[in-house]
Image (cartoon, rainbow, N blue to C red; front, side, top):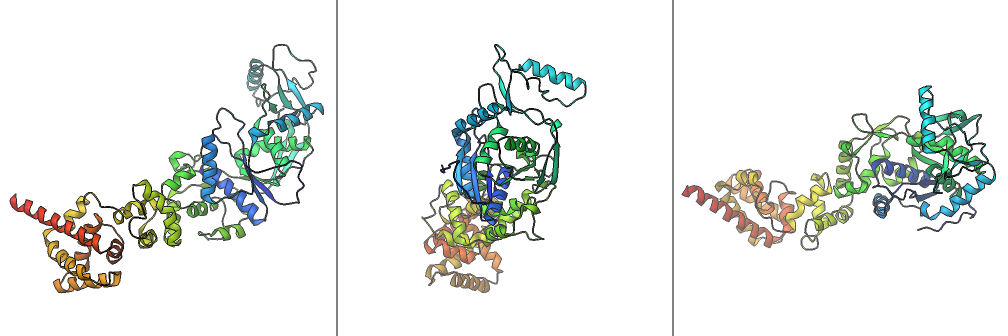
Length: 484
C-alpha cells in the first residue's frame, strides 16, 4: 500500500485516479477507464493514483481486490500512488461529516423509510420526479426511536455548470438535486461523499470516468465547494455497447481482463484495442505504448458510444502474436504449456518453437495446443488426417525419407528440406504428397510449422521414432484391410 499524507504540499501536477469497487473482476469498461486515466497522466508527466472504493462491506472481497490488481499489472498499467483503501479512511470521512454539520451545511434527517416511500408515491401521483422534499432541513429536535441519516444541505437556487472535456458545457439546475444522504444511519459514509473527500485529499486534478457517473457530478461539485475545495476537471467517457446496441455484458464477450489472458490474448493487443474504443488518431489502428502516450488526448475522445467487436480484438491479437519478439511471446506462452502438463524446458527451445508458430497463431492458446507435440508424445493420430495421409501409398516415400534422415548431417532445416525434396524428385511426387504424411507422422495432425523447421526442432531421435511409429501404423492398417 502506498503512503499518503493529506497535508503534503504538491506542485500543480496533473493527477488522475482509477477508483474501482472490489465487488468483482476488472472488466472491459473499467479497464478502458483505467487506461485512459493512465495515458493522460503519462502524457502530462503527471501522477496516476489507484484507489480501492471498498466501503460496501457486504460485496467487497479480497479476491476482487486481487483480481483488479492482477488485471492492471497484466495490462502494464502501473500506478504511482496507492492502492489506497477507503475502508482505512473512515475517521477522515467522519471528521468531514462533523465539519459540515457544525457549519450548517448538513443536517440530520429523521424520516422513516415508510414516510419517504409515502412522499415518493404522492410525488409520482402528481407526475413529479420522486425526490426528497427537504422536510427535515430546518428540524432542530431529534425524533425519539428513529436513528437519523445525515443529508447534505444542497443549494436551493442557481445551477451547477462545468466544462466536461468530452461532453462540453454541462448544466444542472440545483432545483433538480435533492439533499443527498452523506452518512447512513449506522454512520457509514455514502459513495458520493467519500469520492469527494478522497479526490480533494489526494489532489486529483482530472476525473476521467464513465458517463454513467455524469448525474453524480453536480452533487459532487456542490459537496467539494461546501468543503472549501476546487472541483477537478471532469471527462465523462461514453459507455461501451455490444454489437446489438445494448449495454456491454458477458454475452458480448465482456469478461474479466484476466480471462482474456487465459484465452491466449496478449496485453499489448487488449490495450491497443481498448484505446481505440472511443479515441482515434486518423486511421491508425496499431499503436505502441509510446505512441499511445505521446498521442492520446482526452479532448479527442468521441461523444458517442463505442461498440465492442471481438473479431477486431482477435485480429489485433494475431498481429501482436506475429510481430512481437519471439522471446516476449515465449514468456507469455510458457504458463499455458505448463497448464497443459508440459515443461517447456524439456524439449526444443521455446523461443524457437514460438518463432516457427507465430505466422499461424491467432491466440497463445492456439499456439500452445499446436505446440504440445514438440514436448510430449501424442496419444493418437487425428483420425481424418491419418485416413488421408497415412495410407499404404505413403509407406515407400516415408521409408525413403526415414533412411536418409538417419544418416543426415548436419541436422538443420536446410539439409532436411533438401533430403525431402530429393525423395520427391526421385519418386516423381509433389512435395505435399510427402511432406503432409511426414507432418501427420511427427505431429499427430495436419497442422505444424514448415516441415523442415518442425523436424529440426524435434531433433533426429524423436523424428525417426515417430516416423517408425507411423510406418507401423500404416502396415498394421494395411494388414487389417488385407485380412478383411
